Image (cartoon, rainbow, N blue to C red):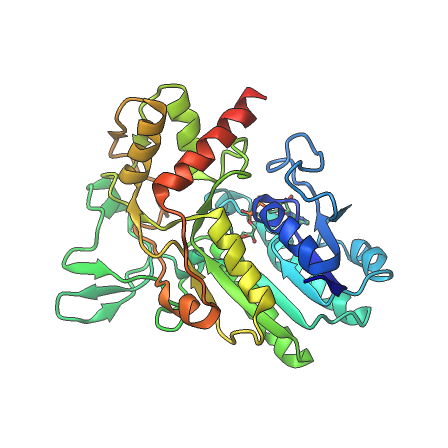
Length: 354
Ligand SMILES: NC(=O)c1ccc[n+]([C@@H]2O[C@H](COP(=O)([O-])OP(=O)(O)OC[C@H]3O[C@@H](n4cnc5c(N)ncnc54)[C@H](O)[C@@H]3O)[C@@H](O)[C@H]2O)c1
């Protein structure tokens, strides 16, 4: 269905933005992607091939008011998807201003500009992150729920990876409090709070999705700071044994890009917006070792190797409770890890060959 209206996607030339682009162009008669073409994500600085040709790309920074003035003088979006962000979790500790500028100042600059130009949209969709939970909530064998916080260095140095006598709980915005454990996570939670408050004040429907680890074709293998699945493909393709941090049993919820795209589209299409954040994952978790083995097998690479190395600040386990998004949006992830890897590998091969 084509609506005679306009949609704006910040960060629209990125991995998720490109996956959405043709579907948004089918739904709206004018789609604009505002993107700075960050060199870390777009090393060539060119318009991505995966961005649908019907989408108008405006190259600019979301934290720059003049960019917004030029854009909103001619264009009033009915729906805004706010995807633009600096996304390096580890990197954000040493480049915190860079992350805060793009993610926090970028969000407030956008909100001010929308208001200043009387371009307040009907709906504002934010792609948040499971990072906001940090280490999340755990339950002891007595049933007591607690928030352990980041694992101390001494614990990791002793090779004690899990919290003894307790089990992690799945991430669910309705029951688990956010406890950010990285600067990136702090900026993502700030985005959520800014968008929620602003939307409430101006009668905008705001929808927030907390995405787990998204992977799939379109995620650049050139960025060393994000995209562990693409990185594993890179190593396995070179017939290297993939190194596994800790004991390899770190749990992650790897959700395929098409599933994430469909969750975001369900939020764009929903009759009314859910008033609370929803978690988007694959419906379960895999250990990093399982993911690495699947990729190694695909490439005929040697078995992954547990190194016992660790990175202070890494979250031990993360996966989403998929039920609320299923109830509220009818969203259900459809792509298995094996099928997802089979789709990712040829993309990584083509990118690296090129
Ligand atoms: N990919 C994941 O696993 C994942 C998980 C959780 C949340 N998210 C969130 O989803 C969103 C999109 O992520 P992605 O995976 O597509 O990342 P991406 O890096 O591929 O895309 C982000 C895009 O934003 C652009 N950008 C960065 N700073 C900008 C700025 N100041 N002004 C304008 N454009 C800017 C980049 O050039 C890039 O094209 C982000 O908000 C991210 O926090 C992603």
